[in-house]
Structure formats: C-alpha cells, structure tokens
View 1 (cartoon, rainbow, N blue to C red):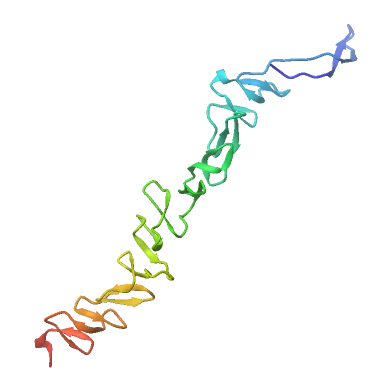
View 2 (cartoon, one colour; view 1 turned 90 degrees about the horizontal axis):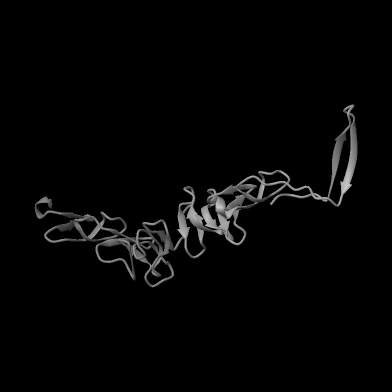
Length: 219
C-alpha cells in the first residue's frame, strides 16, 4: 500500500507551454511504497510498517531491520525498535529500562532490578557470569562467593573479620584493629598493640621486651 491525499493540484500545459492550474478534490492519489516497506509516508522509502516477508520486519526511524540495532529492544506488539536505558546493550522493548545484555562500561547485571551497573552494590558480589549475587547474611560485603566476606556487619554478633570469615571475636594469635583480626608475628603466641609486640611466645622461644627470642639470645 501507499499514501493518499484528499486534495492535490494538477498542472496542465497547453500547446504554448503555459501552465494551466486546476485543483481537484475528492480524488485519491496513491503510489507504491518501496520494499521492504509495508506502509510508508509520502516518501516512498520512509517506512511506517515493514513487510514480514522481507526478512526485515522491525522498524526504527523509517528504516526496516532484520534485528533491532545495539541499544534498542523489540516491542513485539508493534514490531518497533525502542531505545533502551543507557546502560543496556539490549533490552526488552516493552520495558526498555530492563536490560537483557549490558554495555561494556556497565558490565554487571543486577537480577533483582534487571539493570546493568558499573559495580555491584554493597552486600552483593559479581559471579563468573558478571551477575550480582547476594552475600551471605553475616557479610556486609563479599567477593568471589557469597560466604567470602571482605567486611562484617558491625552490629552483628559475628562482627570480627578474619580470613574472610565473620567471627564473634578475634582468635588467639591475632590482634584486633577496628574489628579486623590480623595475625601476630609468627614468633608470637599472642600479641597486643601491634602484630610484632608479643605478649607470649610459642615454645621454645622466650619473651624478652615484647619479642620472642631463642634461649641462647638472652643476655
């Protein structure tokens, strides 16, 4: 099909090449659209609907495509390509802010919001598929897996971080610095203040001025 006009002007020429103008009404001027348009504007190749049989059934800005361009999603009901949220490489055309593929500068996908983001929020970690997964409840933040904590909930009973675990207190042989447990120097059994300020020693070492030394080093 094509476009039509209810009123248009016809220009007639006589033998002397003078123009004789005549306005005609109640007639229809119709012309064929160019493939792959099923319908078009008064410009024959500016499509308003695309032929399914053409292999390019999807429309964007008057052009028919075999698939929607990057950054656009298909609205199936109308076969229109709809602009996605700026973070999406691809999206659901009915919900253009819900990504189905992320842009490189927004590489992580949050399944709970269907949005692409540049880093997972606190309480989530990025898995091997760049999906943001929720950390274990004992972790404030985590990495690699849900129970590999990088910080603990300060108000929880499990608030002390040691070797990516959240504990009720720092274990023996460690020192507490702002609820993060650091290992004492290997020579110390226990320490205080700093990791190399020993308060007791591993046998057979002896404690001397906050250091653990060999017996033959004693003066």
